[in-house]
Amino acid sequence: MAVRRIVVFGDPVLVGEAQKVDAIEPRLVKLVEDMNDTMYANRGVGLAAPQLGAPVQVIVFDTSGGKDAKKKIALLNPVLIERLDGEEEAEEGCLSIPEFVTNVTRASRVVVRGQALDGKTMEIEASGLAARVIQHEIDHLLGRLIIDALNPLQRDLFERKWNQEANQRRKLV
Ligand code: ZN
Image 1 (cartoon, rainbow, N blue to C red):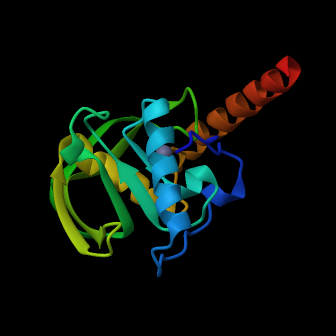
Image 2 (cartoon, rainbow, N blue to C red):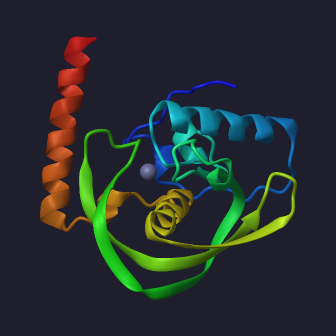
């Protein structure tokens, strides 16, 4: 069990495609434990393996924030197999882009298929926040971030602000 450093925007691991998991080895189980620990420590509701620098198709999420064990889920090789009930827009943040939020349009209800840590196939139907989180984390596995939803002007503004803050951070160190 360990809380690890979250990779932030600018690191190439966040924009590459994650690789499929084909064997459930002890180090994968350890990665999932670290992902859970890191997610809870940062009060997040989801985390994808690339955010810990591991380019593999693994996501964890828990919309109860650790209060309901049934909602603590880890999925290997997750794939969205259905998008239902239209779309909705809501504000989202990302632990890899600290102190930034933007509106993102997502399917209102989804069905996701993947494997649990015991190798069994799992199919989950989710709506509301859970549907949003699942889509956000699967995007991470495809190298997509919430800033990809920005228009060019907003994106430019974001990058300027981000770089300014990065300079600020460097001065503080
Ligand atoms: Zn994120």
